[in-house]
Length: 88
Image 1 (cartoon, rainbow, N blue to C red):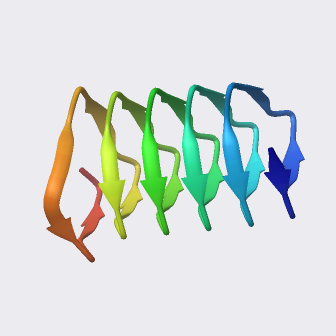
Image 2: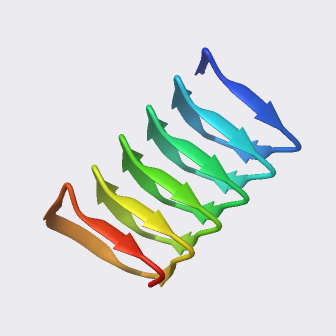
């Protein structure tokens, strides 16, 4: 189910997106609302209101997070809201 989505060169399986903009992104089993991603790769991730550039995430859960150039594997952040991470 896709609503107001703009995508270029993207591959998605079993994904649900609302108001999202993606360029060169690959996603599997991901759910996103109001997210903006460039050159990102995600598997089994759930994100709400997140902005990511050049990030790689596997099995991560984030709410209201902003990340640039970050790499995460098997990370879960439930208590972190409105956090900003740069260069991590």
